[in-house]
Image (cartoon, rainbow, N blue to C red; front, side, top):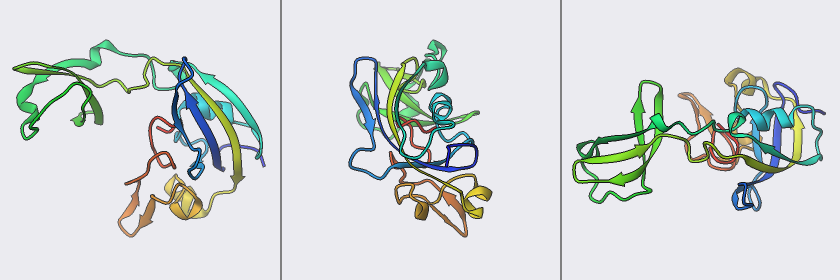
Length: 187
């Protein structure tokens, strides 16, 4: 079966940057499982998987425009230090979740001063070409529930951390195993 829209796809992968440094990998973990064609992966990786077959292995380098976008310097801004009340010690590199009109975003502290803290809301992989070594582990038809919810469920192999219950679907706890993690090619 070929990878195509609304198929459940499981991949083993290793993600490296331009210098060959491994950024993420499914090695030693469950494969990343997602519903193809619904925006669960970065666009370039999803495009590279289209039409592939179970058992097929390949390498692809995704340009920033088809991954996490180009860096946007306007997304680096000083904010009042008072926005971090309750945080005892602020250091460069710390990450926080910020609420914006466009939804929640992870911001990284890049500079700490007496009155202001400079934060960068760019994705940590923005502006970087990403190379994926991929093996298509499985391609299958989705269940009716997966189709209606628009994603793969835990019992279907998303790493065991996603669930759908009476209250709806939850991606809490999902990491590289699937369901919306970032850095592994998921959105």
